Length: 369
View: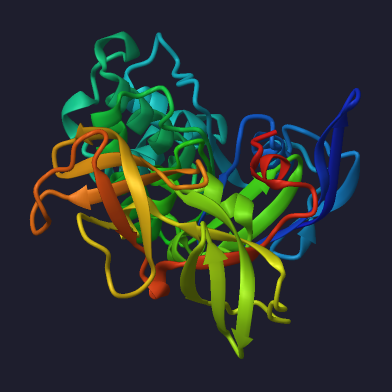
């Protein structure tokens, strides 16, 4: 199982800086996903690791061997693209065995590894079929099998499920992780699907404008992100401007829309009194009620209300004009509120995130560009 290290990777296309001094280590046996908005550099990074793109500066190491100048065929990797590029004139068996064939393996030598991979990917009943006869999911399973059959221990996945419909994509993402773990591989998975990254990764890399913003486990980045952009990009979040009025160690008292809000902050050094801040909270952690609550309660007015199956989805307006999104489960809460109703939000201390107000302004800090 290889460890991969990218050191100071820089890549520029004309006036566009795709990668701006990226440093990243992927550990042995790790399933790592790279996410970020379009044009953030995630595909340029994985192509640099693969050898498809040669960086303008920096180095790529695989198991401490400098492979920066090695062509893709000499790096010992399996690469799966979003575009499912199967050989149309070959059936599933021949497509999967292609890598072994071009390496000079005889048909008897290929038989065992190919049949084992087909079985692991639940493709036993498809061996004689041609690509035009396969569903999108079966095609991508075949492409993944082909990438792995040659014995590669590093798997690079560039939007591998992006061309599939939602249900197939959801099932296949878990099969893909299971396969990687069962085979003891190291995998790097580029995706625009945040839920996909959260559900299958050991760690996630969040990128923006050619740089890495933050790296952490899915739980860390969702529950306790250290950067505003991470909170914005991974899942849904509300952002409210406020001011720190009192500091006691990590306990903060904030003024938010003329309401006193209690919060905790792990940032060091801590905030100072009268310092501007940004309060962030996920919509599923906010309570909404008809009467004021004892702690961290803010008055609001319901602007939109939607039934979405397992929950009610509300957009509410605060007194200062700010809009917040609230998601409340159908079971165990008060009767549905209607547009125009007065209500009160409850902001649990344990789910509040407090950030310093960005110097460049909220709009630029949260921009996807």
